[in-house]
Picture 1 (cartoon, one colour):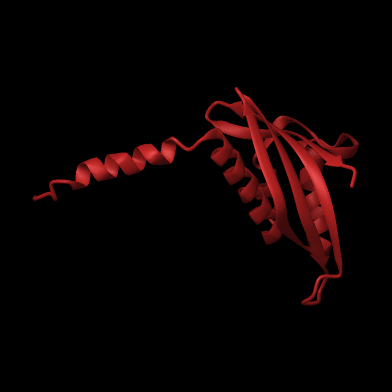
Picture 2 (spheres, helix red, strand yellow):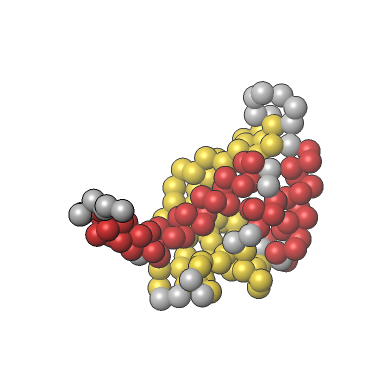
Length: 140
Protein backbone atom coordinates (compact mmCIF):
# COMPACT_ATOMS: atom_id res chain seq x y z
CA UNK A 1 0.00 0.00 0.00
CA UNK A 2 1.43 3.43 -0.94
CA UNK A 3 0.79 6.60 0.99
CA UNK A 4 0.97 10.22 -0.02
CA UNK A 5 4.08 11.54 1.79
CA UNK A 6 2.51 14.65 3.33
CA UNK A 7 -0.90 13.20 4.17
CA UNK A 8 -0.20 11.92 7.70
CA UNK A 9 0.99 15.27 9.15
CA UNK A 10 -2.01 17.04 7.63
CA UNK A 11 -4.41 14.44 9.08
CA UNK A 12 -2.80 14.70 12.52
CA UNK A 13 -2.93 18.49 12.45
CA UNK A 14 -6.62 18.34 11.51
CA UNK A 15 -7.43 15.93 14.35
CA UNK A 16 -5.54 18.06 16.87
CA UNK A 17 -7.37 21.18 15.70
CA UNK A 18 -10.72 19.49 16.35
CA UNK A 19 -9.81 18.86 19.98
CA UNK A 20 -8.21 22.23 20.61
CA UNK A 21 -11.18 24.52 20.14
CA UNK A 22 -11.19 27.37 22.62
CA UNK A 23 -13.57 27.19 25.58
CA UNK A 24 -15.52 30.09 24.03
CA UNK A 25 -15.92 28.15 20.77
CA UNK A 26 -17.03 25.04 22.69
CA UNK A 27 -19.69 27.05 24.55
CA UNK A 28 -20.90 28.69 21.32
CA UNK A 29 -21.15 25.21 19.76
CA UNK A 30 -23.12 23.83 22.75
CA UNK A 31 -25.48 26.83 22.62
CA UNK A 32 -25.94 26.43 18.86
CA UNK A 33 -26.76 22.73 19.35
CA UNK A 34 -29.47 23.73 21.86
CA UNK A 35 -30.83 26.39 19.50
CA UNK A 36 -30.95 23.94 16.59
CA UNK A 37 -32.70 21.31 18.73
CA UNK A 38 -35.32 23.83 19.89
CA UNK A 39 -36.06 24.86 16.31
CA UNK A 40 -36.33 21.17 15.35
CA UNK A 41 -38.79 20.52 18.20
CA UNK A 42 -36.36 18.12 19.91
CA UNK A 43 -36.79 18.53 23.69
CA UNK A 44 -34.27 15.79 24.52
CA UNK A 45 -31.62 17.39 22.32
CA UNK A 46 -32.35 20.86 23.68
CA UNK A 47 -31.92 19.72 27.28
CA UNK A 48 -28.95 17.38 26.69
CA UNK A 49 -26.33 20.05 27.59
CA UNK A 50 -28.11 21.00 30.82
CA UNK A 51 -26.14 20.30 33.98
CA UNK A 52 -27.76 17.85 36.44
CA UNK A 53 -27.96 20.81 38.87
CA UNK A 54 -29.52 23.12 36.24
CA UNK A 55 -31.57 26.01 37.63
CA UNK A 56 -33.87 27.97 35.36
CA UNK A 57 -36.63 30.55 35.69
CA UNK A 58 -39.34 29.92 38.28
CA UNK A 59 -37.46 27.02 39.88
CA UNK A 60 -37.20 25.03 36.66
CA UNK A 61 -34.78 22.09 36.76
CA UNK A 62 -33.54 19.83 33.96
CA UNK A 63 -36.58 17.52 34.14
CA UNK A 64 -39.17 20.29 34.19
CA UNK A 65 -37.33 22.10 31.38
CA UNK A 66 -37.69 19.00 29.20
CA UNK A 67 -41.40 18.63 30.06
CA UNK A 68 -42.00 22.35 29.37
CA UNK A 69 -40.34 22.06 25.96
CA UNK A 70 -42.22 18.88 25.06
CA UNK A 71 -45.51 20.60 25.87
CA UNK A 72 -44.53 23.72 23.93
CA UNK A 73 -43.44 21.74 20.85
CA UNK A 74 -46.80 19.91 20.71
CA UNK A 75 -48.56 23.25 20.28
CA UNK A 76 -46.18 25.38 18.23
CA UNK A 77 -42.91 25.67 16.37
CA UNK A 78 -40.27 27.93 17.89
CA UNK A 79 -37.75 29.99 15.97
CA UNK A 80 -34.66 31.59 17.48
CA UNK A 81 -32.56 34.33 15.93
CA UNK A 82 -29.43 35.25 17.85
CA UNK A 83 -28.97 39.03 17.88
CA UNK A 84 -26.09 39.19 20.38
CA UNK A 85 -23.90 36.49 21.90
CA UNK A 86 -20.97 37.16 24.22
CA UNK A 87 -19.07 34.58 26.27
CA UNK A 88 -16.58 35.19 29.08
CA UNK A 89 -14.66 32.21 30.43
CA UNK A 90 -13.11 32.11 33.91
CA UNK A 91 -11.41 28.77 34.47
CA UNK A 92 -14.01 26.00 34.56
CA UNK A 93 -16.94 28.43 34.62
CA UNK A 94 -18.28 30.83 32.01
CA UNK A 95 -20.95 33.45 31.59
CA UNK A 96 -22.84 34.04 28.37
CA UNK A 97 -25.07 37.00 27.57
CA UNK A 98 -27.47 36.48 24.67
CA UNK A 99 -30.15 38.61 23.08
CA UNK A 100 -32.61 36.55 21.07
CA UNK A 101 -35.56 37.13 18.80
CA UNK A 102 -38.02 34.36 19.64
CA UNK A 103 -40.83 33.54 17.24
CA UNK A 104 -43.62 31.00 17.46
CA UNK A 105 -46.16 29.72 15.01
CA UNK A 106 -48.95 27.23 15.23
CA UNK A 107 -50.16 25.68 12.00
CA UNK A 108 -49.50 28.58 9.64
CA UNK A 109 -46.44 29.59 7.69
CA UNK A 110 -45.92 32.98 9.30
CA UNK A 111 -44.96 33.56 12.92
CA UNK A 112 -47.87 34.40 15.21
CA UNK A 113 -45.72 35.96 17.91
CA UNK A 114 -42.28 37.49 18.16
CA UNK A 115 -40.43 38.84 21.17
CA UNK A 116 -36.95 40.10 21.88
CA UNK A 117 -35.52 38.52 25.05
CA UNK A 118 -32.20 38.76 26.89
CA UNK A 119 -30.67 35.98 28.98
CA UNK A 120 -27.65 35.33 31.15
CA UNK A 121 -26.40 31.75 30.99
CA UNK A 122 -23.90 30.28 33.42
CA UNK A 123 -21.87 27.31 32.20
CA UNK A 124 -19.44 24.96 33.93
CA UNK A 125 -17.01 22.46 32.51
CA UNK A 126 -17.61 18.87 33.57
CA UNK A 127 -14.99 16.50 32.27
CA UNK A 128 -14.36 17.60 28.71
CA UNK A 129 -17.71 19.25 28.01
CA UNK A 130 -19.52 22.43 28.99
CA UNK A 131 -22.87 22.11 30.80
CA UNK A 132 -25.49 24.81 31.23
CA UNK A 133 -25.81 25.36 34.97
CA UNK A 134 -28.15 28.36 35.13
CA UNK A 135 -30.45 30.34 32.84
CA UNK A 136 -31.69 33.75 33.96
CA UNK A 137 -34.06 35.95 31.98
CA UNK A 138 -32.96 39.58 32.05
CA UNK A 139 -35.33 42.51 32.14
CA UNK A 140 -35.66 44.41 28.85
